[in-house]
Image (cartoon, rainbow, N blue to C red):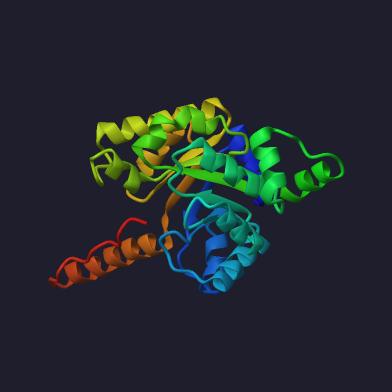
Length: 270
């Protein structure tokens, strides 16, 4: 699935599936492609990836038909352009809390490569570009996907105003930061968190904007959110899935021979 198809699916309500990829190993890409996912999520907010490495990952996954979505380090339109220039087919902006942040990001994603005063006139004054510039921008940016993270109480309070800004393709819940902002850190079964997630999903989908959660603890919980209308599913991460599978196998070996060992720890949430 390329960026253009992903955008169409998100707005249509079609469910799409991805996972977080942390490793740049060239041996990994074919294995990831074989899983049947639609896109890959690459995080540069919490994971240190050099620009050249990121571009290699984006262009390789895109060549295999998996749209690379890059979470940029901050909600900065220039960071969005860097990711797109490197081969990303979409960007995820972290910790969005105001409509103004979205307007600037939408300008970068929907009207790339325009910048400066001309872009300000389009995004803030509503002055549409004339032909042939209008067609050029529409064609060049048709496959660029814009996703935003909703992960704080101020974002929840401003959710309807944020989603009124044109250009958003999907909203992704950031569970760890959202529970922390709600005052119930890492309590993913807490009613405050669950109610917030439901509000985000229903509000976004009512506007034909894609919505979903990056979650790693429960497939069943993801299915519950899908039944509410979520259609963007980012399931776990390569490192988390690897750790869980190997921990299970090693535990089984030790149990077979009555061995004991200190329990391992799962990696922190990303």
